[in-house]
Length: 345
Image 1 (cartoon, rainbow, N blue to C red):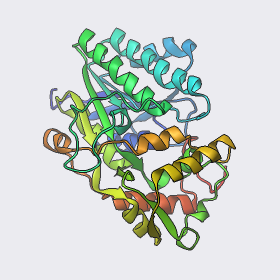
Image 2 (cartoon, one colour):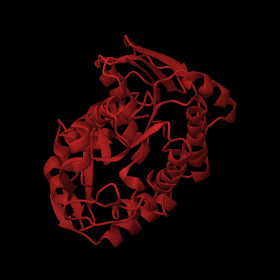
Image 3 (tube, rainbow, N blue to C red):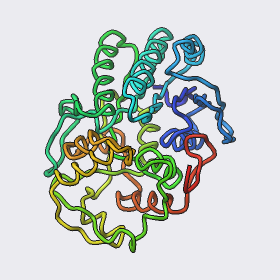
Image 4 (tube, rainbow, N blue to C red):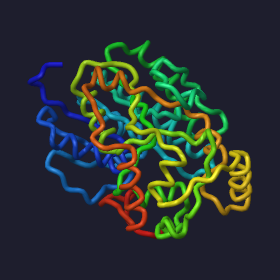
């Protein structure tokens, strides 16, 4: 890429957790000329370089609109993703997989030079929870028991074919751990705990015990740091996948320390059984398949991102989780429909 070139970037999912961080990061980047943020509903955010347009990737009728939006783009960043409805995997498949296929077709037809795709640690096959972490060469077949991991893994196969058939497009796949920031706390509470779960319940005196089991080890990253990695990938001649995560790896002891609670050993099967029962009774918003996936996610090595992107997280995993917890308690949000704040609803 010519260092003096200023890029026109189209961004799907621009009003979500990562999208709102990325549009702000691109606003500050001199080598970005403009950003077209796509979302189902126009936000209230007013930014100097960013314009907004409406598009719903799940709707086949919006395919011509997508084609127009990307036809003169220098780069497309694909962040759009639907986590709900968790009880209707066919619906999330229509949005996440079929919608992505429509976008990739538009990118190919327009011969867009760069495509950055938001994949996930969830795309990886089960792997080790300890050690230095798996590299980007670890298999990406996901966990078959959860819609989220199936969809992320399927799109990895789609992009394998896309790269083969369209070598003129530089494809980058970001595979972050769990992404948190205070402004996305209300949205994530609604997704994973249900819209009527009171954020104020996440207080130490109300959560004296944290269940501890060996499989409870996962990685976290502040959303702004994930956005910074995407910004760097747009500006550097890199291809392929990049793992993204911050230190330390989160376990029950770390969670207990954040919440001022105590970690108590509990078999994973007992907790899984309780979640499955609550799911059947419609008392839980998170399906047990996601719990199964969490217990099997490998720990990631981020060496490639540090080496080739010059990337370093500015926030530790504990700081990112702390920001999220404060946001949940306070009803944190942003000026977009997905990130609307509030302790309920």
